Image 1 (cartoon, chains in turn blue, brown):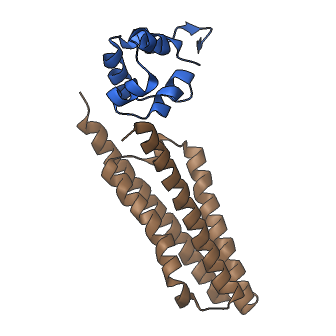
Image 2 (spheres, rainbow over the protein chains, first blue to last red; image 1 turned 30 degrees about the horizontal axis):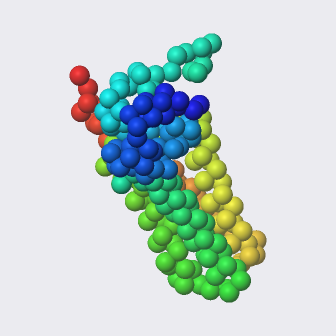
Image 3 (tube, helix red, strand yellow; image 1 turned 180 degrees about the vertical axis):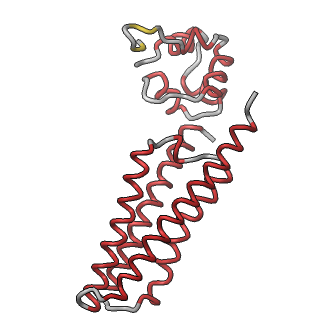
Length: 71
Length: 141
């Protein structure tokens, strides 16, 4: 599932994928893949992303459960 | 280094290891059947095929992980029987092609192989269970 909240938070901070990638020490491709929902980052990376975007884990990565499945 | 890239490299190395093991077994097969070389000429392949699982067991013990955590008893048993069965079939095929019908003394080899295989498997499993238990106790509240 696409992580649109992360994309929105990044855009709100006026950061490109490359800027965020440099800040959290990964490649731009990894940020793109996280936003596209093609890669599940580790908790460590999630925390780094949250700190870089001034958001909490809940705000960026929490998924509500619907009918036994996550959104 | 990017954790995703690191993970992908680990995957590639794991695949490479499997491919190399298959090539080793293939090389053993070709040397033995097609070139008719003696078993001593295949020492390197044997060393690799024996050393790889030993290395795996040692690392397993060092890291405190056990196959029982990721495999059910039934699946583990099936895997052991598959290994034992394929080993026996390979031995019998090689023996048959070299000497013809199985003689009485060949059964001694088969029996020793079976016993050694099961013994090593049991010891390996017991060791990894022991170290895994020790690791669990280390992190207990």
